[in-house]
Length: 470
Image 1 (cartoon, helix red, strand yellow):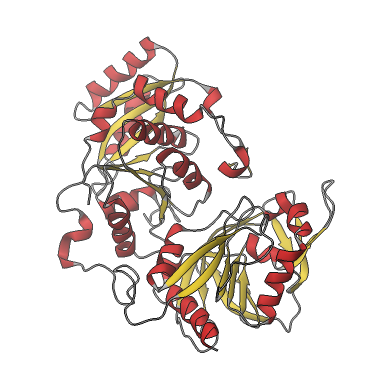
Image 2 (cartoon, one colour):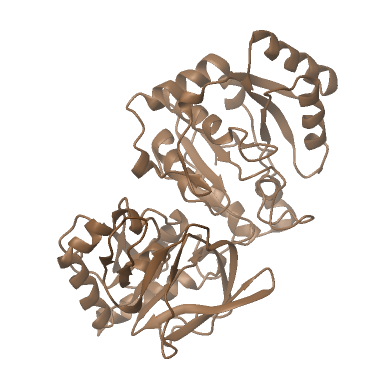
Protein backbone atom coordinates (compact mmCIF):
# COMPACT_ATOMS: atom_id res chain seq x y z
CA UNK A 1 0.00 0.00 0.00
CA UNK A 2 1.16 3.53 -0.69
CA UNK A 3 2.41 5.34 2.39
CA UNK A 4 2.02 8.73 0.74
CA UNK A 5 -1.33 9.93 1.99
CA UNK A 6 -3.00 12.75 3.88
CA UNK A 7 -6.40 14.02 4.94
CA UNK A 8 -7.57 17.51 3.96
CA UNK A 9 -9.68 18.93 6.80
CA UNK A 10 -10.85 22.31 8.02
CA UNK A 11 -11.93 24.02 11.23
CA UNK A 12 -15.48 24.29 9.89
CA UNK A 13 -17.66 23.75 6.84
CA UNK A 14 -17.36 26.40 4.17
CA UNK A 15 -13.60 26.81 4.53
CA UNK A 16 -12.91 25.63 0.98
CA UNK A 17 -11.69 22.07 1.59
CA UNK A 18 -13.62 20.63 -1.37
CA UNK A 19 -12.11 23.13 -3.81
CA UNK A 20 -8.64 22.55 -2.37
CA UNK A 21 -9.10 18.78 -2.49
CA UNK A 22 -10.19 18.86 -6.12
CA UNK A 23 -7.32 21.18 -7.05
CA UNK A 24 -4.74 18.90 -5.41
CA UNK A 25 -6.20 15.77 -7.00
CA UNK A 26 -6.34 17.38 -10.43
CA UNK A 27 -2.76 18.67 -10.15
CA UNK A 28 -1.40 15.31 -9.03
CA UNK A 29 -3.22 13.59 -11.87
CA UNK A 30 -1.87 16.11 -14.38
CA UNK A 31 1.62 15.21 -13.16
CA UNK A 32 0.92 11.61 -14.11
CA UNK A 33 0.31 10.33 -10.60
CA UNK A 34 -2.33 7.74 -9.72
CA UNK A 35 -4.54 9.33 -7.07
CA UNK A 36 -6.75 7.30 -4.72
CA UNK A 37 -9.60 9.61 -3.65
CA UNK A 38 -11.61 9.22 -0.44
CA UNK A 39 -14.36 11.13 1.37
CA UNK A 40 -15.01 11.10 5.11
CA UNK A 41 -18.63 10.71 6.11
CA UNK A 42 -21.79 9.63 4.29
CA UNK A 43 -21.81 12.25 1.52
CA UNK A 44 -22.41 11.12 -2.08
CA UNK A 45 -21.91 14.40 -3.93
CA UNK A 46 -18.28 15.28 -3.20
CA UNK A 47 -17.12 11.80 -4.33
CA UNK A 48 -18.65 12.52 -7.74
CA UNK A 49 -16.34 15.51 -8.14
CA UNK A 50 -13.42 13.46 -6.81
CA UNK A 51 -14.05 10.94 -9.57
CA UNK A 52 -13.93 13.75 -12.10
CA UNK A 53 -10.64 15.12 -10.73
CA UNK A 54 -8.83 11.87 -9.92
CA UNK A 55 -10.18 9.72 -12.73
CA UNK A 56 -11.30 6.88 -10.48
CA UNK A 57 -14.14 6.28 -8.00
CA UNK A 58 -13.95 7.92 -4.60
CA UNK A 59 -14.64 5.79 -1.53
CA UNK A 60 -16.43 6.86 1.65
CA UNK A 61 -14.71 6.33 5.01
CA UNK A 62 -17.15 6.57 7.91
CA UNK A 63 -16.30 5.50 11.45
CA UNK A 64 -19.87 5.62 12.71
CA UNK A 65 -21.58 3.64 9.97
CA UNK A 66 -18.77 1.07 9.75
CA UNK A 67 -16.45 -0.62 12.27
CA UNK A 68 -13.08 1.09 12.57
CA UNK A 69 -11.29 -2.04 11.35
CA UNK A 70 -13.44 -1.95 8.21
CA UNK A 71 -12.57 1.72 7.67
CA UNK A 72 -8.86 0.98 8.01
CA UNK A 73 -9.03 -2.04 5.74
CA UNK A 74 -11.07 -0.14 3.15
CA UNK A 75 -8.54 2.67 3.07
CA UNK A 76 -5.65 0.23 2.72
CA UNK A 77 -7.39 -1.76 -0.01
CA UNK A 78 -8.34 1.17 -2.23
CA UNK A 79 -5.02 2.99 -1.74
CA UNK A 80 -2.92 -0.07 -2.52
CA UNK A 81 -2.24 0.67 -6.19
CA UNK A 82 -2.02 4.48 -5.98
CA UNK A 83 0.95 6.83 -5.93
CA UNK A 84 -0.80 9.01 -3.37
CA UNK A 85 -4.07 8.87 -1.43
CA UNK A 86 -6.03 12.08 -0.78
CA UNK A 87 -8.88 12.04 1.73
CA UNK A 88 -11.36 14.90 2.02
CA UNK A 89 -12.77 15.48 5.48
CA UNK A 90 -16.32 16.29 6.50
CA UNK A 91 -17.54 19.36 8.43
CA UNK A 92 -14.95 20.58 10.94
CA UNK A 93 -12.05 18.25 11.77
CA UNK A 94 -13.40 17.10 15.13
CA UNK A 95 -17.13 17.34 14.37
CA UNK A 96 -18.89 13.99 14.67
CA UNK A 97 -22.13 12.66 16.10
CA UNK A 98 -21.76 14.27 19.53
CA UNK A 99 -19.96 16.89 21.55
CA UNK A 100 -17.36 14.58 23.08
CA UNK A 101 -17.12 11.61 20.73
CA UNK A 102 -14.85 11.23 17.71
CA UNK A 103 -17.38 8.93 16.05
CA UNK A 104 -18.29 10.01 12.56
CA UNK A 105 -15.61 12.71 12.40
CA UNK A 106 -12.68 13.32 10.09
CA UNK A 107 -10.45 13.10 13.16
CA UNK A 108 -11.60 9.53 13.77
CA UNK A 109 -10.66 8.51 10.23
CA UNK A 110 -7.30 10.26 10.58
CA UNK A 111 -6.61 8.47 13.86
CA UNK A 112 -7.76 5.03 12.69
CA UNK A 113 -5.82 5.15 9.41
CA UNK A 114 -2.79 7.07 10.70
CA UNK A 115 -3.43 9.90 8.23
CA UNK A 116 -1.58 13.21 8.74
CA UNK A 117 -3.93 16.18 8.46
CA UNK A 118 -3.54 19.19 6.21
CA UNK A 119 -5.76 21.91 7.63
CA UNK A 120 -7.47 24.32 5.23
CA UNK A 121 -8.05 27.61 7.03
CA UNK A 122 -10.28 30.34 5.65
CA UNK A 123 -7.96 33.25 6.38
CA UNK A 124 -10.29 36.01 5.24
CA UNK A 125 -9.99 38.81 7.82
CA UNK A 126 -7.28 37.03 9.88
CA UNK A 127 -3.53 37.23 10.41
CA UNK A 128 -2.05 36.19 13.77
CA UNK A 129 -5.45 34.89 14.83
CA UNK A 130 -5.11 32.20 12.17
CA UNK A 131 -2.03 30.86 13.95
CA UNK A 132 -3.93 30.77 17.24
CA UNK A 133 -6.70 28.81 15.56
CA UNK A 134 -4.27 26.29 14.06
CA UNK A 135 -2.45 25.90 17.38
CA UNK A 136 -5.71 24.94 19.05
CA UNK A 137 -6.46 22.28 16.44
CA UNK A 138 -2.90 20.92 16.41
CA UNK A 139 -2.89 20.37 20.15
CA UNK A 140 -6.46 19.27 20.67
CA UNK A 141 -6.02 15.47 20.45
CA UNK A 142 -2.74 13.56 20.47
CA UNK A 143 -4.22 10.85 18.23
CA UNK A 144 -4.47 13.35 15.36
CA UNK A 145 -1.31 14.80 13.80
CA UNK A 146 -1.61 18.07 11.92
CA UNK A 147 1.19 18.08 9.35
CA UNK A 148 0.61 21.51 7.91
CA UNK A 149 -1.75 24.22 6.75
CA UNK A 150 -3.17 25.66 3.54
CA UNK A 151 -4.49 29.19 3.93
CA UNK A 152 -7.51 29.91 1.73
CA UNK A 153 -9.16 33.18 0.69
CA UNK A 154 -5.91 35.08 1.05
CA UNK A 155 -6.21 38.72 0.00
CA UNK A 156 -2.66 39.54 -1.16
CA UNK A 157 0.99 38.53 -1.08
CA UNK A 158 1.51 40.61 2.05
CA UNK A 159 -1.44 38.89 3.71
CA UNK A 160 0.14 35.53 2.84
CA UNK A 161 3.45 36.62 4.37
CA UNK A 162 1.73 37.72 7.59
CA UNK A 163 0.07 34.33 7.86
CA UNK A 164 3.32 32.46 7.25
CA UNK A 165 5.22 34.52 9.82
CA UNK A 166 2.50 34.11 12.44
CA UNK A 167 2.44 30.33 12.05
CA UNK A 168 6.25 30.08 12.01
CA UNK A 169 6.36 31.90 15.33
CA UNK A 170 3.57 29.92 16.98
CA UNK A 171 4.17 26.47 15.46
CA UNK A 172 7.54 26.25 13.71
CA UNK A 173 7.16 22.48 13.27
CA UNK A 174 4.17 22.88 10.97
CA UNK A 175 4.49 23.47 7.24
CA UNK A 176 2.57 26.09 5.31
CA UNK A 177 1.81 24.25 2.08
CA UNK A 178 0.55 27.38 0.39
CA UNK A 179 -1.80 30.34 0.25
CA UNK A 180 -4.76 30.34 -2.15
CA UNK A 181 -6.10 33.69 -3.32
CA UNK A 182 -9.78 34.47 -3.45
CA UNK A 183 -11.41 33.20 -6.63
CA UNK A 184 -15.19 32.89 -6.52
CA UNK A 185 -15.28 31.64 -10.11
CA UNK A 186 -14.12 28.19 -8.97
CA UNK A 187 -17.08 27.69 -6.66
CA UNK A 188 -19.65 24.95 -7.31
CA UNK A 189 -23.39 25.71 -7.02
CA UNK A 190 -25.17 24.31 -3.97
CA UNK A 191 -28.50 22.56 -3.52
CA UNK A 192 -30.03 21.93 -0.11
CA UNK A 193 -27.08 21.25 2.24
CA UNK A 194 -24.59 20.20 -0.41
CA UNK A 195 -23.20 20.85 -3.83
CA UNK A 196 -25.13 20.21 -7.00
CA UNK A 197 -24.18 16.77 -8.30
CA UNK A 198 -21.48 16.61 -10.94
CA UNK A 199 -24.03 14.98 -13.27
CA UNK A 200 -26.27 18.07 -13.01
CA UNK A 201 -23.61 20.79 -12.85
CA UNK A 202 -21.38 19.54 -15.68
CA UNK A 203 -18.40 21.87 -15.09
CA UNK A 204 -16.86 23.74 -18.01
CA UNK A 205 -14.29 21.73 -20.02
CA UNK A 206 -11.41 23.76 -18.61
CA UNK A 207 -12.58 23.55 -14.99
CA UNK A 208 -10.14 20.82 -13.97
CA UNK A 209 -7.29 22.56 -15.76
CA UNK A 210 -8.02 25.74 -13.86
CA UNK A 211 -8.09 23.84 -10.58
CA UNK A 212 -4.82 22.08 -11.37
CA UNK A 213 -3.23 25.42 -12.28
CA UNK A 214 -4.49 26.91 -9.03
CA UNK A 215 -2.70 24.19 -7.10
CA UNK A 216 0.48 24.33 -9.21
CA UNK A 217 0.74 28.11 -8.81
CA UNK A 218 -0.09 28.38 -5.13
CA UNK A 219 0.69 25.13 -3.32
CA UNK A 220 3.79 23.12 -2.49
CA UNK A 221 2.67 20.01 -4.36
CA UNK A 222 6.06 18.34 -3.97
CA UNK A 223 5.78 18.75 -0.22
CA UNK A 224 2.21 17.46 -0.15
CA UNK A 225 3.16 14.45 -2.25
CA UNK A 226 5.82 13.48 0.30
CA UNK A 227 3.51 13.39 3.35
CA UNK A 228 3.49 9.82 4.62
CA UNK A 229 1.49 7.75 7.04
CA UNK A 230 3.64 6.09 9.72
CA UNK A 231 5.18 2.68 8.94
CA UNK A 232 3.13 1.09 11.73
CA UNK A 233 -0.18 2.99 11.60
CA UNK A 234 -2.75 2.52 14.37
CA UNK A 235 -4.85 0.00 12.47
CA UNK A 236 -1.93 -2.46 12.42
CA UNK A 237 -1.10 -2.19 16.12
CA UNK A 238 -2.12 -4.68 18.75
CA UNK A 239 -2.25 -7.61 16.35
CA UNK A 240 -5.65 -6.61 14.99
CA UNK A 241 -6.66 -8.75 12.04
CA UNK A 242 -8.39 -7.49 8.89
CA UNK A 243 -12.12 -8.14 8.74
CA UNK A 244 -12.63 -11.57 7.21
CA UNK A 245 -15.44 -13.29 9.12
CA UNK A 246 -17.76 -13.17 6.13
CA UNK A 247 -15.17 -12.74 3.41
CA UNK A 248 -16.26 -9.20 2.67
CA UNK A 249 -12.75 -7.75 2.56
CA UNK A 250 -10.51 -10.53 1.39
CA UNK A 251 -11.87 -11.35 -2.03
CA UNK A 252 -14.62 -13.29 -3.70
CA UNK A 253 -16.11 -16.04 -1.57
CA UNK A 254 -15.10 -19.47 -2.78
CA UNK A 255 -17.42 -22.20 -3.98
CA UNK A 256 -20.35 -20.02 -5.05
CA UNK A 257 -22.01 -19.56 -8.40
CA UNK A 258 -21.96 -16.13 -10.06
CA UNK A 259 -25.01 -13.91 -10.07
CA UNK A 260 -25.91 -10.79 -12.09
CA UNK A 261 -27.33 -7.74 -10.28
CA UNK A 262 -28.53 -4.71 -12.24
CA UNK A 263 -27.65 -1.40 -10.56
CA UNK A 264 -29.25 1.88 -11.66
CA UNK A 265 -26.48 4.34 -12.50
CA UNK A 266 -27.42 7.59 -14.23
CA UNK A 267 -28.08 11.25 -13.42
CA UNK A 268 -31.25 10.39 -11.50
CA UNK A 269 -29.69 7.53 -9.50
CA UNK A 270 -26.10 8.45 -8.67
CA UNK A 271 -25.99 8.10 -4.86
CA UNK A 272 -24.39 4.77 -4.02
CA UNK A 273 -21.52 3.80 -1.74
CA UNK A 274 -18.78 2.34 -3.90
CA UNK A 275 -18.02 -0.19 -1.17
CA UNK A 276 -21.58 -1.50 -1.40
CA UNK A 277 -20.87 -2.46 -5.00
CA UNK A 278 -17.47 -3.85 -4.10
CA UNK A 279 -18.93 -6.00 -1.34
CA UNK A 280 -21.55 -7.33 -3.73
CA UNK A 281 -18.79 -8.26 -6.18
CA UNK A 282 -16.86 -9.95 -3.40
CA UNK A 283 -20.01 -11.93 -2.58
CA UNK A 284 -19.93 -13.29 -6.12
CA UNK A 285 -22.11 -10.74 -7.92
CA UNK A 286 -21.52 -9.30 -11.36
CA UNK A 287 -22.68 -5.70 -11.12
CA UNK A 288 -24.36 -4.54 -14.36
CA UNK A 289 -25.16 -0.83 -14.74
CA UNK A 290 -28.39 0.33 -16.37
CA UNK A 291 -30.28 3.61 -16.77
CA UNK A 292 -33.95 3.99 -15.82
CA UNK A 293 -33.78 7.29 -17.68
CA UNK A 294 -32.52 6.08 -21.04
CA UNK A 295 -32.70 2.29 -21.36
CA UNK A 296 -35.74 0.56 -22.82
CA UNK A 297 -35.46 -2.41 -20.48
CA UNK A 298 -33.45 -4.18 -17.82
CA UNK A 299 -30.13 -5.88 -18.69
CA UNK A 300 -30.44 -9.45 -19.90
CA UNK A 301 -29.90 -12.39 -17.60
CA UNK A 302 -30.13 -10.54 -14.29
CA UNK A 303 -31.16 -12.09 -10.98
CA UNK A 304 -31.69 -8.94 -8.91
CA UNK A 305 -31.99 -5.15 -9.01
CA UNK A 306 -30.39 -2.41 -6.86
CA UNK A 307 -32.00 1.05 -7.12
CA UNK A 308 -29.76 3.59 -5.32
CA UNK A 309 -30.69 7.12 -4.35
CA UNK A 310 -30.37 10.37 -6.23
CA UNK A 311 -32.66 13.13 -7.42
CA UNK A 312 -35.50 11.39 -9.31
CA UNK A 313 -37.67 14.46 -8.77
CA UNK A 314 -35.41 16.44 -11.11
CA UNK A 315 -35.97 13.88 -13.87
CA UNK A 316 -39.54 12.95 -13.03
CA UNK A 317 -40.87 13.68 -16.52
CA UNK A 318 -38.28 11.52 -18.26
CA UNK A 319 -38.64 8.68 -15.75
CA UNK A 320 -42.42 8.78 -16.11
CA UNK A 321 -42.20 8.79 -19.92
CA UNK A 322 -40.04 5.66 -20.00
CA UNK A 323 -43.00 3.28 -19.82
CA UNK A 324 -41.00 0.28 -21.04
CA UNK A 325 -38.53 0.53 -18.16
CA UNK A 326 -41.28 1.05 -15.59
CA UNK A 327 -43.07 -2.04 -16.86
CA UNK A 328 -39.84 -4.07 -16.80
CA UNK A 329 -39.12 -3.15 -13.18
CA UNK A 330 -42.75 -3.74 -12.16
CA UNK A 331 -42.78 -7.17 -13.81
CA UNK A 332 -39.50 -8.11 -12.12
CA UNK A 333 -40.90 -7.23 -8.70
CA UNK A 334 -44.16 -9.11 -9.36
CA UNK A 335 -42.08 -12.13 -10.43
CA UNK A 336 -40.42 -12.04 -6.98
CA UNK A 337 -37.01 -10.99 -8.25
CA UNK A 338 -35.00 -9.59 -5.30
CA UNK A 339 -35.00 -5.78 -5.47
CA UNK A 340 -33.33 -3.42 -3.02
CA UNK A 341 -34.12 0.31 -3.24
CA UNK A 342 -33.09 3.29 -1.14
CA UNK A 343 -34.27 6.90 -1.01
CA UNK A 344 -34.60 8.03 -4.66
CA UNK A 345 -34.82 4.39 -5.74
CA UNK A 346 -37.64 3.92 -3.23
CA UNK A 347 -39.49 6.93 -4.65
CA UNK A 348 -39.16 5.44 -8.13
CA UNK A 349 -41.03 2.36 -6.90
CA UNK A 350 -43.98 4.42 -5.58
CA UNK A 351 -46.91 5.59 -7.69
CA UNK A 352 -44.93 8.74 -8.45
CA UNK A 353 -44.57 12.43 -7.61
CA UNK A 354 -47.36 14.76 -6.61
CA UNK A 355 -47.59 18.06 -8.46
CA UNK A 356 -45.90 20.99 -6.73
CA UNK A 357 -43.82 24.13 -7.22
CA UNK A 358 -45.06 24.43 -10.78
CA UNK A 359 -44.03 20.86 -11.68
CA UNK A 360 -46.72 18.44 -12.88
CA UNK A 361 -47.39 15.11 -11.27
CA UNK A 362 -45.45 12.12 -12.61
CA UNK A 363 -46.30 8.42 -12.55
CA UNK A 364 -43.57 5.96 -11.58
CA UNK A 365 -43.44 2.17 -11.20
CA UNK A 366 -46.33 1.89 -8.72
CA UNK A 367 -45.19 -1.01 -6.53
CA UNK A 368 -45.87 0.90 -3.31
CA UNK A 369 -49.35 2.49 -3.15
CA UNK A 370 -48.23 5.98 -2.14
CA UNK A 371 -46.97 9.13 -3.82
CA UNK A 372 -44.02 11.32 -2.89
CA UNK A 373 -44.08 15.09 -2.58
CA UNK A 374 -41.30 17.63 -2.26
CA UNK A 375 -41.24 19.89 0.80
CA UNK A 376 -39.90 23.43 1.21
CA UNK A 377 -37.91 22.33 4.25
CA UNK A 378 -35.72 19.34 4.92
CA UNK A 379 -37.65 16.28 6.09
CA UNK A 380 -34.80 14.16 7.44
CA UNK A 381 -31.03 14.33 7.93
CA UNK A 382 -28.68 12.18 9.93
CA UNK A 383 -27.32 8.76 10.80
CA UNK A 384 -29.73 5.89 11.33
CA UNK A 385 -29.46 2.54 13.09
CA UNK A 386 -31.63 -0.25 11.73
CA UNK A 387 -32.59 -3.39 13.64
CA UNK A 388 -33.96 -6.33 11.68
CA UNK A 389 -34.43 -10.06 11.97
CA UNK A 390 -34.23 -11.52 8.49
CA UNK A 391 -33.30 -10.22 5.09
CA UNK A 392 -34.86 -11.59 1.92
CA UNK A 393 -36.79 -14.51 3.29
CA UNK A 394 -34.82 -17.21 5.06
CA UNK A 395 -31.42 -15.59 4.52
CA UNK A 396 -30.55 -14.08 7.88
CA UNK A 397 -28.25 -11.08 8.03
CA UNK A 398 -29.11 -10.74 11.69
CA UNK A 399 -28.68 -7.98 14.18
CA UNK A 400 -28.42 -4.44 12.91
CA UNK A 401 -27.02 -2.19 10.24
CA UNK A 402 -26.20 1.49 9.98
CA UNK A 403 -26.78 4.10 7.35
CA UNK A 404 -27.73 7.69 6.62
CA UNK A 405 -30.92 9.51 5.67
CA UNK A 406 -31.23 12.87 3.88
CA UNK A 407 -34.22 14.04 1.87
CA UNK A 408 -36.59 16.92 1.24
CA UNK A 409 -39.43 14.63 0.19
CA UNK A 410 -42.01 12.62 2.05
CA UNK A 411 -44.39 9.85 1.10
CA UNK A 412 -48.09 9.53 1.82
CA UNK A 413 -49.37 7.21 4.53
CA UNK A 414 -48.20 3.67 3.79
CA UNK A 415 -51.02 1.11 4.28
CA UNK A 416 -50.88 -0.73 7.60
CA UNK A 417 -50.75 -4.10 5.89
CA UNK A 418 -47.48 -3.25 4.11
CA UNK A 419 -44.73 -5.18 5.89
CA UNK A 420 -42.17 -3.09 7.83
CA UNK A 421 -38.74 -4.77 8.16
CA UNK A 422 -36.78 -2.03 9.98
CA UNK A 423 -36.91 -0.75 13.53
CA UNK A 424 -35.15 2.58 13.11
CA UNK A 425 -33.38 4.70 15.73
CA UNK A 426 -31.29 7.87 15.81
CA UNK A 427 -28.66 7.98 18.56
CA UNK A 428 -30.84 5.85 20.81
CA UNK A 429 -34.10 7.64 19.99
CA UNK A 430 -36.67 5.29 18.49
CA UNK A 431 -38.16 6.44 15.19
CA UNK A 432 -40.93 5.00 13.05
CA UNK A 433 -40.76 1.49 11.64
CA UNK A 434 -39.58 1.51 8.06
CA UNK A 435 -38.03 -0.70 5.39
CA UNK A 436 -41.12 -1.58 3.37
CA UNK A 437 -41.36 -5.00 1.78
CA UNK A 438 -43.56 -6.21 -1.05
CA UNK A 439 -42.90 -9.73 -2.32
CA UNK A 440 -39.10 -9.86 -2.55
CA UNK A 441 -38.65 -6.09 -2.84
CA UNK A 442 -37.25 -4.09 0.08
CA UNK A 443 -37.36 -0.29 -0.07
CA UNK A 444 -36.46 2.47 2.38
CA UNK A 445 -35.46 6.10 2.64
CA UNK A 446 -32.28 4.99 4.44
CA UNK A 447 -28.99 4.49 2.59
CA UNK A 448 -27.53 1.45 4.36
CA UNK A 449 -23.78 0.95 4.23
CA UNK A 450 -23.15 -2.74 3.59
CA UNK A 451 -19.88 -2.44 5.50
CA UNK A 452 -21.87 -1.93 8.71
CA UNK A 453 -22.95 -5.58 8.69
CA UNK A 454 -20.86 -8.23 6.97
CA UNK A 455 -23.95 -10.27 6.14
CA UNK A 456 -25.80 -7.70 4.05
CA UNK A 457 -24.05 -8.05 0.70
CA UNK A 458 -23.85 -11.88 0.85
CA UNK A 459 -27.53 -12.02 1.88
CA UNK A 460 -28.63 -9.96 -1.11
CA UNK A 461 -26.35 -11.89 -3.47
CA UNK A 462 -27.65 -15.20 -2.09
CA UNK A 463 -31.27 -14.10 -2.51
CA UNK A 464 -30.53 -13.19 -6.14
CA UNK A 465 -28.71 -16.48 -6.64
CA UNK A 466 -31.63 -18.45 -5.20
CA UNK A 467 -34.01 -16.60 -7.52
CA UNK A 468 -31.84 -17.52 -10.48
CA UNK A 469 -31.83 -21.19 -9.46
CA UNK A 470 -35.60 -21.49 -9.21
